[in-house]
Image (tube, rainbow, N blue to C red; front, side, top):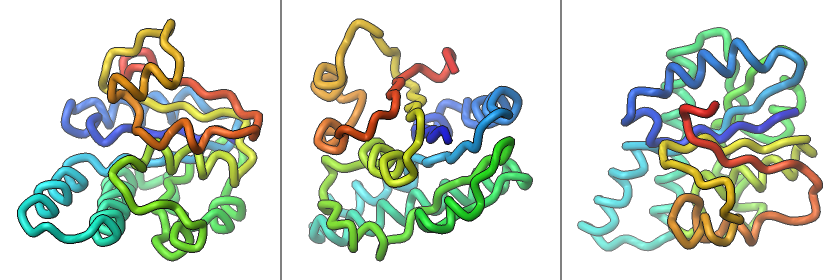
Length: 184
């Protein structure tokens, strides 16, 4: 199984559909799970939190809803993809040549004790999910240019991956690739 995190910024750069098409055409030998970034929906949560000064737990839950909205957007673009809401649901649906979109369940993430913080974005959630699914690979597709000589910590320092990412990377044994949308 391959987990592919599609950055929310891909929808702003108008490359989301191109990435979905490539994913559909090129990943036919393994089950694929898409982790959507929150995109503009998550950006609105940041704006609202700054304006209204509500707590990080509320913002975290709203950002998860932003990921759910992106999952629906992807499903609207690719009706043959399916949506799954939990690890169990993904495992039931996963099959070779099938693409499943993860629409994360807030309760499942709360039960996993995932910290409610802007340091934890869909990047870190993709690592968490890949570990739970025993994925063989995690691919993060970004709109930012990626220098392949940089390690995960350096990519974190540059803001290309979130601050919590390295804390989620464990001994799960899956390959991690962080690539630019044009290299996908």
